[in-house]
Length: 340
Length: 289
View (cartoon, rainbow over the protein chains, first blue to last red):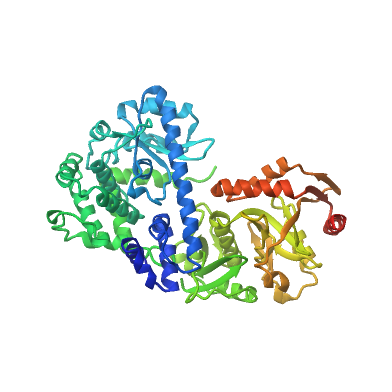
């Protein structure tokens, strides 16, 4: 699978020196499909690469710079919109990595702006954002009600003028999920950036990344999440007391197992350094690693049965079976309603 | 992908993969005069995939989803009979969404004596047809869909893909052309009937040769003959709307477009029919010489 080329290139950019034209083509296509082309382009910056590869990587760096600029601007606009009601948004994921100048943010694709606000301030945040030009994109009443009752975020909003989406979270997993992260602790311990925004503590970033990768969703595009995790550990894993603090924090968020598996997978794929007791176990990690390697050289995902398994798993993680059945029934009926 | 072809159009290189043989065979015939892209020696800029809309749709009522490096989730699936059109749309989509090395203008362009006319306008304005006709009458066709504006020196680079002729313009343009330069007639597409035309040999042979723009035209088909000077400010705004990567290029795009509209005179040109348009362009050109 060409995803292995992505991993090889990210871990050791010099390995690309031996790649054939076909391998380069597969690498670039697969990396783009995994939204890792910008990251890869930054990793390979300054290296000698084939003449027809160099402009592709240069374009990817240009795009990464623009995405970063746009992401920081969106964060700035959200800060400005929320300041009048006294809410300091906690930036999540890519926006946080970029705003805090972290290794994980280098070249990273950043789509929507994700922020975390206190649950009891959601109504105020919503009103303030709408007053500042953000609008609904889920006009369907069932979807809207579903989000508000069961999700960890408001229905997505898009800014009318800039056409950019914001996801306003009040916690990091759906309320229907078995695990209940402690969002209040994340908010209370967030680190101010001095710009009116804040970012989560490093261990909270890791817990969130692991939750996103392994406790929510079907792992599509998971290689990027795992690279985030690798970068966070590379940058901070050597700090005194890092690992015990991470274990304690993960336990508090009911994310002990996903965080440990994420660390093992990062070690397995990227050679991320971690203490020996963090790398024990992992008998069932094989399928997770295989899922992360599904991307092939034309940018498609192979292994449909394995992917279907993880797709089914994602729904079971998100909600209890009876509720899932009810939800799918409602969605199915809506999709098959005769037109008019 | 089971079937694949690598090809170069202007400065861009593509590989097109397909679950079916027919679209690739058609591309191979129509792009025979273009430089090939050898997958063992070259890394193409873009990947296009013609993939089944659902796994079983490779066999049962075959239905093409246009995938690739850049794709639109909301794009409607297409019939296998329209596979050539799907491939062309896939390549256009890569350029529209992914090209960063020039400012991309949704415009046709033609060249004579080293200087170029850029023709822009909405779909149906007749720019494709007019450019194709000029391309058969002493002009070098640089492209019917995209004009690539150099970010550094202001020149226009060709993108002479297959010309996409629609509906009534098919018969007008293809009447005297050999069948070897024509693709199959595709009826019942989202835009009606379409037939692809291989540009004249010199358009392909000189596809890496840029030209300095001398005139910007906003043609409009089906109106009484008229012309009006377009001021740089209006041209600027209309071209930002005709560019898919103006925002992505940031300051470089702004600089290139500003230079273009301040240096190149612009005219809106209404015309009742093709002959009138060709005559008007020739008259304008003679007046500028």
